[in-house]
Length: 224
Ligand SMILES: C[S@@+](CC[C@H](N)C(=O)[O-])C[C@H]1O[C@@H](n2cnc3c(N)ncnc32)[C@H](O)[C@@H]1O
Image: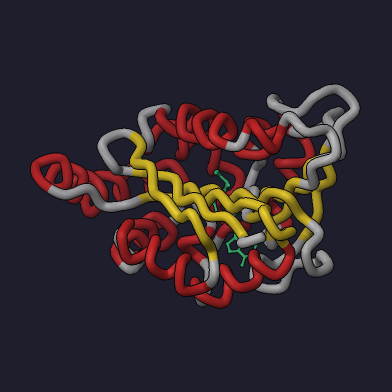
Protein backbone atom coordinates (compact mmCIF):
# COMPACT_ATOMS: atom_id res chain seq x y z
CA UNK A 1 0.00 0.00 0.00
CA UNK A 2 2.78 2.48 0.91
CA UNK A 3 4.58 1.70 -2.35
CA UNK A 4 1.38 2.52 -4.24
CA UNK A 5 0.72 5.88 -2.57
CA UNK A 6 4.39 7.01 -2.49
CA UNK A 7 4.33 9.21 -5.65
CA UNK A 8 1.54 11.43 -4.30
CA UNK A 9 2.34 11.00 -0.60
CA UNK A 10 3.99 14.38 0.11
CA UNK A 11 1.30 16.38 -1.65
CA UNK A 12 -1.45 14.51 0.16
CA UNK A 13 0.24 14.89 3.52
CA UNK A 14 0.37 18.67 3.15
CA UNK A 15 -3.18 18.95 1.78
CA UNK A 16 -4.83 16.59 4.27
CA UNK A 17 -3.10 18.10 7.30
CA UNK A 18 -3.63 21.67 6.01
CA UNK A 19 0.18 22.00 6.13
CA UNK A 20 0.29 21.34 9.88
CA UNK A 21 2.55 18.33 9.21
CA UNK A 22 5.59 20.62 8.77
CA UNK A 23 5.05 22.10 12.24
CA UNK A 24 4.62 18.65 13.77
CA UNK A 25 7.96 17.37 12.40
CA UNK A 26 9.68 20.59 13.44
CA UNK A 27 8.28 20.45 17.01
CA UNK A 28 9.30 16.81 17.35
CA UNK A 29 12.87 17.57 16.29
CA UNK A 30 12.98 20.53 18.69
CA UNK A 31 11.86 18.28 21.58
CA UNK A 32 14.96 16.13 21.07
CA UNK A 33 17.45 18.92 20.37
CA UNK A 34 19.46 18.03 23.51
CA UNK A 35 20.34 14.72 21.79
CA UNK A 36 20.50 15.96 18.20
CA UNK A 37 23.01 18.66 19.10
CA UNK A 38 25.50 16.02 20.29
CA UNK A 39 27.72 15.20 17.27
CA UNK A 40 28.30 11.59 18.37
CA UNK A 41 24.59 10.81 18.98
CA UNK A 42 23.31 7.84 16.96
CA UNK A 43 19.86 8.65 15.64
CA UNK A 44 17.33 6.50 13.76
CA UNK A 45 14.21 7.79 12.03
CA UNK A 46 12.20 4.61 11.42
CA UNK A 47 9.19 4.54 9.08
CA UNK A 48 10.85 7.58 7.46
CA UNK A 49 8.67 7.49 4.33
CA UNK A 50 9.82 10.21 1.95
CA UNK A 51 12.08 11.71 4.64
CA UNK A 52 10.42 14.81 6.08
CA UNK A 53 10.87 13.85 9.74
CA UNK A 54 14.48 12.95 8.95
CA UNK A 55 15.00 16.35 7.34
CA UNK A 56 13.72 18.11 10.47
CA UNK A 57 16.16 16.05 12.57
CA UNK A 58 19.06 16.80 10.22
CA UNK A 59 18.47 20.54 10.52
CA UNK A 60 19.36 20.27 14.22
CA UNK A 61 22.57 18.25 13.70
CA UNK A 62 25.89 20.06 14.06
CA UNK A 63 28.53 20.13 11.34
CA UNK A 64 30.35 16.80 10.98
CA UNK A 65 27.88 14.89 13.19
CA UNK A 66 27.25 11.13 12.92
CA UNK A 67 24.87 10.51 10.01
CA UNK A 68 21.18 10.03 10.89
CA UNK A 69 19.79 6.68 9.73
CA UNK A 70 16.50 6.97 7.83
CA UNK A 71 14.79 3.59 7.46
CA UNK A 72 11.55 2.26 6.00
CA UNK A 73 10.33 -1.02 4.49
CA UNK A 74 8.81 0.58 1.38
CA UNK A 75 11.32 0.80 -1.45
CA UNK A 76 9.17 3.36 -3.31
CA UNK A 77 9.12 5.66 -0.26
CA UNK A 78 12.88 5.24 0.20
CA UNK A 79 13.55 6.15 -3.45
CA UNK A 80 11.86 9.51 -2.82
CA UNK A 81 13.66 9.93 0.51
CA UNK A 82 17.03 9.41 -1.23
CA UNK A 83 16.27 12.30 -3.58
CA UNK A 84 14.98 14.60 -0.80
CA UNK A 85 17.92 13.85 1.51
CA UNK A 86 20.66 13.83 -1.14
CA UNK A 87 23.88 15.54 -0.08
CA UNK A 88 23.06 15.41 3.65
CA UNK A 89 24.69 13.41 6.44
CA UNK A 90 22.22 10.55 6.30
CA UNK A 91 22.15 6.80 5.60
CA UNK A 92 18.95 5.64 3.92
CA UNK A 93 18.31 1.95 4.57
CA UNK A 94 15.55 -0.57 3.97
CA UNK A 95 14.47 -2.03 7.32
CA UNK A 96 11.45 -3.38 9.17
CA UNK A 97 10.62 -1.59 12.44
CA UNK A 98 9.82 -4.96 14.00
CA UNK A 99 13.34 -6.33 13.35
CA UNK A 100 15.77 -3.43 13.40
CA UNK A 101 19.23 -4.06 11.92
CA UNK A 102 21.06 -2.62 14.95
CA UNK A 103 22.82 -4.25 17.85
CA UNK A 104 21.50 -4.03 21.41
CA UNK A 105 21.97 -0.67 23.15
CA UNK A 106 23.48 1.08 20.13
CA UNK A 107 21.19 4.11 19.55
CA UNK A 108 20.61 7.39 21.42
CA UNK A 109 17.35 8.38 19.76
CA UNK A 110 14.60 6.74 17.71
CA UNK A 111 11.91 8.85 16.10
CA UNK A 112 8.96 7.61 14.11
CA UNK A 113 6.40 9.91 12.51
CA UNK A 114 3.00 8.56 11.46
CA UNK A 115 4.48 5.08 11.10
CA UNK A 116 4.13 3.46 14.51
CA UNK A 117 0.34 3.24 14.13
CA UNK A 118 0.87 0.84 11.23
CA UNK A 119 2.97 -1.70 13.09
CA UNK A 120 1.45 -5.17 13.38
CA UNK A 121 2.12 -5.37 17.12
CA UNK A 122 2.64 -2.16 19.13
CA UNK A 123 4.05 -3.86 22.23
CA UNK A 124 6.56 -5.89 20.21
CA UNK A 125 7.54 -2.71 18.32
CA UNK A 126 8.21 -0.88 21.59
CA UNK A 127 10.25 -3.80 22.93
CA UNK A 128 12.32 -3.77 19.73
CA UNK A 129 12.94 0.00 20.14
CA UNK A 130 14.04 -0.61 23.74
CA UNK A 131 16.41 -3.35 22.63
CA UNK A 132 18.39 -1.09 20.29
CA UNK A 133 18.35 2.03 22.52
CA UNK A 134 21.18 2.73 24.94
CA UNK A 135 20.26 3.15 28.61
CA UNK A 136 19.14 6.80 28.80
CA UNK A 137 18.24 6.74 25.09
CA UNK A 138 14.90 8.22 24.02
CA UNK A 139 12.03 7.45 21.69
CA UNK A 140 9.69 9.95 20.04
CA UNK A 141 6.51 8.63 18.47
CA UNK A 142 4.66 11.30 16.49
CA UNK A 143 1.26 10.11 15.38
CA UNK A 144 -2.39 10.97 14.86
CA UNK A 145 -4.89 10.80 17.65
CA UNK A 146 -8.60 11.38 18.06
CA UNK A 147 -9.40 14.53 20.04
CA UNK A 148 -12.48 14.67 22.26
CA UNK A 149 -15.33 17.24 22.47
CA UNK A 150 -16.44 19.49 19.63
CA UNK A 151 -13.03 19.40 17.91
CA UNK A 152 -13.28 15.59 18.02
CA UNK A 153 -16.67 15.62 16.30
CA UNK A 154 -15.49 17.98 13.54
CA UNK A 155 -12.27 16.01 13.18
CA UNK A 156 -14.23 12.71 13.11
CA UNK A 157 -16.39 13.95 10.24
CA UNK A 158 -13.34 15.24 8.36
CA UNK A 159 -11.43 12.00 8.92
CA UNK A 160 -14.30 9.60 8.11
CA UNK A 161 -15.79 11.38 5.09
CA UNK A 162 -13.75 14.22 3.60
CA UNK A 163 -10.23 12.82 3.98
CA UNK A 164 -10.86 9.41 2.27
CA UNK A 165 -12.62 11.22 -0.56
CA UNK A 166 -9.83 13.77 -1.16
CA UNK A 167 -7.18 11.08 -0.58
CA UNK A 168 -8.74 8.76 -3.15
CA UNK A 169 -9.06 11.57 -5.75
CA UNK A 170 -5.44 12.75 -5.46
CA UNK A 171 -3.74 9.37 -4.96
CA UNK A 172 -6.04 7.31 -7.18
CA UNK A 173 -6.07 4.71 -4.36
CA UNK A 174 -9.40 4.50 -2.52
CA UNK A 175 -8.22 1.71 -0.18
CA UNK A 176 -5.24 3.53 1.27
CA UNK A 177 -7.12 6.61 2.43
CA UNK A 178 -10.00 4.55 3.80
CA UNK A 179 -7.36 2.67 5.78
CA UNK A 180 -6.11 5.89 7.44
CA UNK A 181 -9.23 6.59 9.58
CA UNK A 182 -9.47 2.88 10.43
CA UNK A 183 -5.86 2.80 11.61
CA UNK A 184 -6.37 5.89 13.82
CA UNK A 185 -9.56 4.32 15.22
CA UNK A 186 -7.60 1.18 16.11
CA UNK A 187 -4.70 3.09 17.70
CA UNK A 188 -4.72 3.32 21.52
CA UNK A 189 -5.88 6.72 22.86
CA UNK A 190 -3.03 8.81 24.36
CA UNK A 191 -3.37 7.61 28.01
CA UNK A 192 -3.53 3.94 26.88
CA UNK A 193 -0.50 4.41 24.67
CA UNK A 194 1.38 6.01 27.59
CA UNK A 195 0.48 2.97 29.70
CA UNK A 196 1.60 0.59 26.94
CA UNK A 197 4.96 2.34 26.76
CA UNK A 198 5.37 2.08 30.54
CA UNK A 199 4.44 -1.60 30.50
CA UNK A 200 6.95 -2.22 27.71
CA UNK A 201 9.66 -0.75 29.97
CA UNK A 202 9.97 2.95 29.09
CA UNK A 203 10.23 5.52 31.89
CA UNK A 204 9.39 9.26 32.00
CA UNK A 205 6.68 8.60 29.44
CA UNK A 206 4.65 11.60 28.29
CA UNK A 207 2.27 12.71 25.57
CA UNK A 208 2.22 16.24 24.14
CA UNK A 209 -0.82 17.13 22.01
CA UNK A 210 -0.27 19.05 18.79
CA UNK A 211 -2.99 21.06 16.99
CA UNK A 212 -5.91 20.42 19.37
CA UNK A 213 -4.80 16.83 19.89
CA UNK A 214 -5.32 15.79 16.27
CA UNK A 215 -1.68 14.67 16.45
CA UNK A 216 0.77 14.37 19.30
CA UNK A 217 4.17 13.24 20.47
CA UNK A 218 4.70 10.30 22.80
CA UNK A 219 8.13 10.38 24.41
CA UNK A 220 9.81 7.75 26.53
CA UNK A 221 13.24 7.06 27.98
CA UNK A 222 15.05 3.75 28.37
CA UNK A 223 15.92 3.42 32.08
CA UNK A 224 19.61 3.81 33.00
C1 LIG B 1 2.27 7.46 6.88
S1 LIG B 1 3.91 7.11 6.37
C2 LIG B 1 4.87 8.26 7.31
C3 LIG B 1 6.13 8.67 6.63
C4 LIG B 1 6.94 9.79 7.28
N1 LIG B 1 7.52 9.37 8.54
C5 LIG B 1 6.13 11.05 7.47
O1 LIG B 1 6.09 11.59 8.59
O2 LIG B 1 5.57 11.53 6.47
C6 LIG B 1 4.21 5.60 7.20
C7 LIG B 1 5.49 4.94 6.76
O3 LIG B 1 5.73 3.85 7.63
C8 LIG B 1 6.30 2.80 6.87
N2 LIG B 1 6.13 1.56 7.63
C9 LIG B 1 4.99 1.02 8.09
N3 LIG B 1 5.24 -0.09 8.79
C10 LIG B 1 6.59 -0.27 8.77
C11 LIG B 1 7.48 -1.23 9.32
N4 LIG B 1 7.03 -2.29 10.01
N5 LIG B 1 8.81 -1.07 9.13
C12 LIG B 1 9.29 -0.03 8.42
N6 LIG B 1 8.50 0.91 7.85
C13 LIG B 1 7.17 0.80 8.04
C14 LIG B 1 5.56 2.86 5.53
O4 LIG B 1 6.25 2.22 4.49
C15 LIG B 1 5.44 4.37 5.34
O5 LIG B 1 6.50 4.88 4.59
